[in-house]
View 1 (cartoon, chains in turn purple, brown):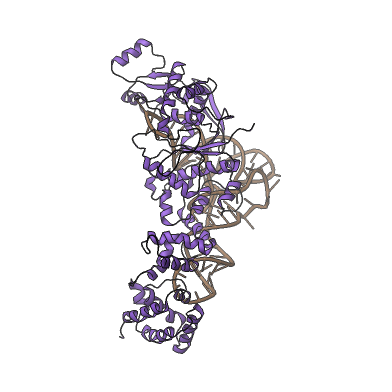
View 2 (cartoon, chains in turn yellow, orange):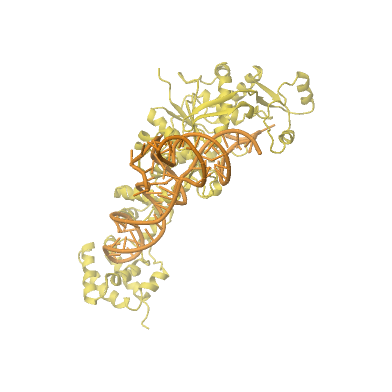
Length: 511
RNA sequence: GGUCCCGUCGUCUAGCGGCCUAGGACGCCGCCCUCUCACGGCGGUAGCGAGGGUUCAAAUCCCUUCGGGACUACCA
């Protein structure tokens, strides 16, 4: 039988889903979809200090926006629970974690350690090998009683091998190995009894039958401990027994005994340091608010550390599912280049069909407060009418708004520089010539409007710029809009003429 | 300090001993187009961190060195 391909994304819910996390999620989701496997979403909220349900919901919304759907995951907010290997909220899995820790202790693979944080700190000393190996490993029952009598609460540590190496074949980095002498006995259960990442994460991955672990390089050195835990939990039957004890579903049938690891290169800021909140807008939500297309975000994220080996850069999500290979992921860290993201976004916008682009533009106009929410039928129609003329002019959805925002307002907002530059005295005669002729037009079409301008250009012997710019400024208040005849033709003729008359007074007086 | 990892144009990358006087994309610069802003077209700018080897031949292999990063928690 074939082993089920199961990957997971397990964010700690504090703050927003940022680009690094989204990239990790994507690099897990892509192989899962390609292999017809399962993508499991597990929220690791064991850090009571920082985890919030709002953050978890925000992350799920961000995943939704990106189109990274999960097959199993918790019920949070509007998201329903899915899957048979829950709970998917790690804090709810504590009974399992405690059962495993207890059994590890009983089997002698783990032990209680009573040092205080201060003692540990002191023992670590300055820069020397502070690998915790011996410590309270072999305390006698009397010694433990003694510590308890002092009021100390123990943590539970796992006994690590004293010699030898641990190695694995990393899907992106190739062979990786560590000396056990470098890895200390680690804490799996805190003094207050709560499980640490070292316990909860492995136990849950194993219990849920995760076959491939994709995560950031910052977790590379956590891998030896997880491999050890796997050896302690699976062959010994400890996990199976604990699962049964707490009444959780057993591991999925056919779940592989060993997992494949893939450690992704870090995403860094311009300072070459691990990307974090202080690097500015790295929250996925911020890109959505800025008007980046979700499929472009996915495309760009995929290129952060991966390439197919050819010059292709623009992919649809389906193409990525087909082309993506973990073993072609780069090993060196990548800088998250927003300029390139924006450029790709512009290119993608140009490829959108007009109706689709119009649909996507509406929320951007609403975010800018230019139109109502919900939009009136007139507003919606006008945004859609402008859409084809806005393509190629803006890198994001939001940036398209200012080009035509004036059309949705009853009052003109004058751009002082435009007025100063284009409504000089010479503009007066031009406007006086054009206004009645445009008003007299029976066919309010781009061609007819253009004909009026062409006629004015030859009659008044001015350049096209001198003819069009004054009209543009007087009607829109700005010097920059999509092509004028096309734009005017989309508006009500009377409305345009009214603005031309009203704006005539903005023209500077002679001298 | 220790352990581990990384190092091709400013940025993201192709490259896995000859196809490379290093290709693409973004950025930047110039020209063309042009009613504004853009789009588009054309051209240009710029890189194998350094030093030693190995080889007929090295961006590609080896060593050293320099630089950067991650980890080194009762965070994840």
